[in-house]
Every structure is written in C-alpha cells, then in structure tokens.
Image (cartoon, rainbow, N blue to C red; front, side, top):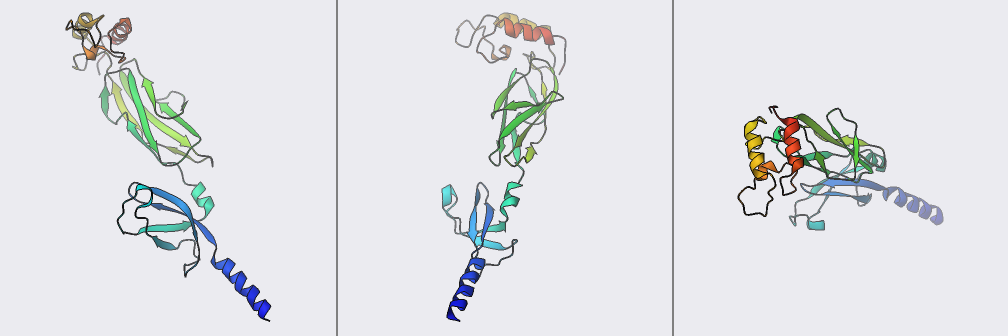
Amino acid sequence: MKKFLFLILIFSFLLVTQAYSFKASSTNYDFVGTLTEGSGMSSSPNYQANLNLGGINGMSSSPNYQAITLVDTTLLQSIVPQLTLTSPQNNTTLYKINIPLTFTISKAVTKISYKLGNQPDVTIPGNTTLKITKVGPYNVSVSATDSANNTGTSNLAFFSSCVGDIIRNGAIDIFDASKLAIAYGSNSSNSTGKWDPNADFDNDNKVTIFDASTLAINYGKTC
C-alpha cells in the first residue's frame, strides 16, 4: 500500500512539474526560456506569472516585475518576424545614387529580401545599399522568413529620388549642369575651390564622367 501511494506521489509530481515555454518582453529586451510548473503555479497555458528580470543581460536593475505568459513551444514557433525599416525614411527626397537600406528584425531568420516598387524581390544577407540613378518616386519594403516558414514584412517607405539636382530647386536644369561643369575633375581633398559635394552623386569623393552621365540622363526632369 505504501509503495502504491509512493508511485501516486511521484506521478503527481511529474504532472505538477510540467515545463512551459515563455517569452517576456520589456522595453528593449525579449527573453525566451522555460518555466517549470510548481510552487502553486496554475497549469493553465494562459497563466500569468511574475518574474523579477532586473539586472539580467543588461536589463534595468529596477525591482519591477515583468509579466510572462506561458505558451506552448509551437506557439513560439508561429511568431511572425517583426521588421522595422529605418532607412530610407518615409516621405523623403534623396539626392544621391547610393541609398542605405537598413532595418531591424525581431528574431532570427533564414531569408531576407527587399522589394523596390514593382521589381522582383532581391535576396540580401542583411542591411544593404540601393543604387538608384533615375529621378522619380519609389517605394521599398523588406521581408524576412524564419525557420518555421513564417514571413513578416516591414512598413512600406515612400521616397523620391532627385539625383542630379545639385542646387536643390526640384529640377535638373542648366544651373545644375553649370555647377557640375565647374566641379568636374575635382575631389574632396583638392584645394582649388572647385569641389562641390552635391555634384558627387555616387559618393566616391570625386566628380567624374559617371556623375556627368547621371545628370545627363535626368536632365530636364523635375522632382
């Protein structure tokens, strides 16, 4: 009889110590791990527990408690990656060919790509640089897929390219051509006074035939 009661006690302990996966979020930190049911914790998968996360991995040492929701591991796997596009910023006008494409992703992913307007998706390893040589309106977004095949997409950023507009008057005209002619052949380190960074469309610290041809293909356009 004692042996039977002992087996029941062991079985009850196994039930009570069921492990749950959890994710806790603070302002700047996500923590994922497991909690073992016990010490009066509820067996409900929606149970709210309090855990003092102060001082863990650079988190604030404040004694405030963070709420944790116990979830099933499969639920964690179904969390879609969250992406935030940081550059280019929405509703901006840009004057250079090389435009940084930067973003943040909330979790580890296996594939990242961007879509520029109606062009096909382009796979990238991470932050990259867009090369836009023609004046016009554009939009771009970034997508990422994790190992469970969940795909998230960033906000769509709308921006305008006004490459060639050296004097920043919203048009590529004779005034820009004159400015480029003066700066042509100069570089950022010469002391002749000809150097004009606005005429260096590709940011290579010199004004070359490439910059001249970029202005030429956009000549007469407005932005």
